[in-house]
Image (tube, rainbow, N blue to C red; front, side, top):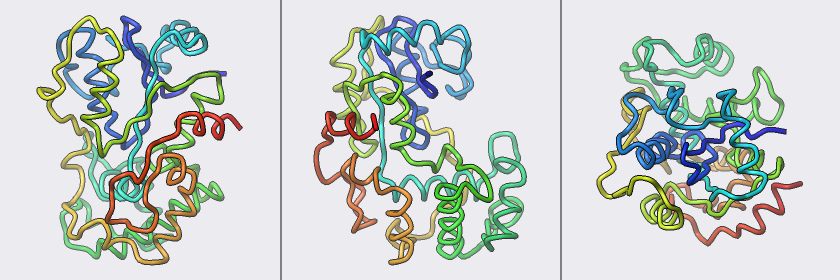
Amino acid sequence: MGFPGTWMTESESVIYRVVPKCACSTIGQILYYSDHGRFYDGDIHDAQEGLHKWGIDGSQAVIRPAVRQHRVYAFTCVRNPFDRILSSFFDKICGVQRNGKRYRGNLVPLLTQKYGVDVGGEDGNQPFDQIRSFRRFLLFARDTIRWRRPMEPDIHWSSMAGHVGTFVANGGRYDRILWTERFAEGMQAVLDAIDTPVKVDLAAVPRFNESDGHGPTRDHPPEAYFDDLSKHLVYEIYKRDFELFRYDFENPGNRMPVGEIDLDAVHAKLRD
């Protein structure tokens, strides 16, 4: 059993389970800074030094006992499911990636052909019906998650409970789950609970958003993209995310959580 998506500072001050589209670039840079007194020059996801990562062979022997023995403070971060799937659409589907290409090569042509999704032309800058295309993308996301067709679900729109749950199922335990929507409050609580080689002034940390500028500007407020059918699809896909992390299913315009996360309940349900 392993701990995919798990990062740990080299000083072993803290463990973080990455959840895509949930402030992971900023969190990774904060962890890097807390050890080295500088930010990583580039996308923190590409870093092969300065952080222990489960995907780096040499890190696994260090991360595994730290998690299993729960001798290092562990946390993760979640986000409103409505906002997260919308962000995934504009970044990964409509946007041109850092390498100048479309995400996952033939994914966008597949969506165009099989689901009628429009992405604004080759460069993503042409006008298109964003609401119509997003709702069609939702059908695709549902198909990948529920039936694993026409492809396996992508990490950027697979459920947060699935990401968070692997850590728990394999023997880990979280000390805190913070919300993207209350990031400063939650991240400060994490920093207050640990000892780091370098003190982090959270207010001075720049915003790291590696997907910023990849896609077109949204023409509408978040709630405009979700009609009754879209809300039903999102709830079908992310029911556990809404319930475990206390988000409002009824109102896509309400990004904020509606209650406190019960860590004991999260661990009990994700251990199944």
